[in-house]
Figure 1 (cartoon, rainbow, N blue to C red):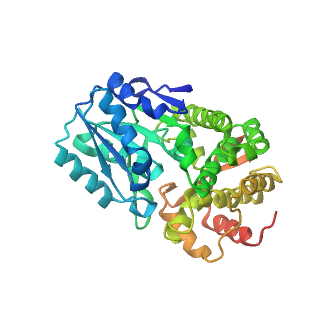
Figure 2: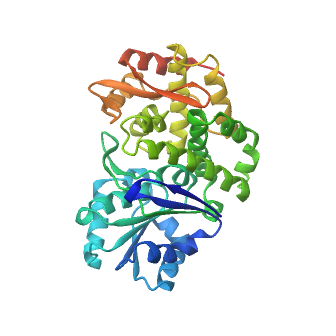
Length: 364
């Protein structure tokens, strides 16, 4: 078991990583918050595996808790789903000293976190991420929110959790496609921040795909440390934190236009990282050959790296222009300049379109 401290003054919290840490949920909740009651927000699949374990841990610490079940999938990350969470909290008579637990993947974490940020102007919550993607990305940093039909995460709030419990045993029930999706975000951390970590991932890919617990814990810990370092320097994304968006501008357009059903988030991010690194190379922002290395690492993890030709360039550009990372009509991208380093650039509509078109005919 390992711990990573996120130092944000009054909003500081600890991330605990290891096999079986879900059993510590009640102990952590009681020690840090002393909640009057707890609502555990999850989806049907995760609740089947881990819902009762979470409730039992809370009960053993003398904390009254109930499950709130919401549908699984990005298409349900909506204001309507959050309204259902509010309705359940009101039925429970949850007061301002109550607490939410987000038990599930990134969708659950984003929605439960947003509900916690806004219910009675804000209550405490704990993140218990059960997917690799959520463990290394969505559960850390305090970003919460929901999607609108026009785009991803267009409504949200910054609301830091009081604790994050990452139980690596939950990855044993994770579908293979979801595991690979999470590896895309792990690779992203190496590309933007730590070249040696990227090399480690390349040499330990078989262990990661085989779900070797020791390797997974090491990789999760380092990914969390990278995100922690960035968040501590720029909690509300006024500058540095934007490098964590590498690949996501194109990825969000792919997800929106494909109806959130064709691609997992990490798969879309994998494609987006290739497009955006191609743009960086074409415009002279990045070292030559960087895209081939990035795409090779992602492909080794059995992630998609080719552009979806069923999505038109014009539709993608229109979606990108609605993305929250576009400011004053200017597209702002986090682009790798070399492996392990990333900077922010403003690019034109034409540069973006040209990179998407180039990706359609690009080969490794």
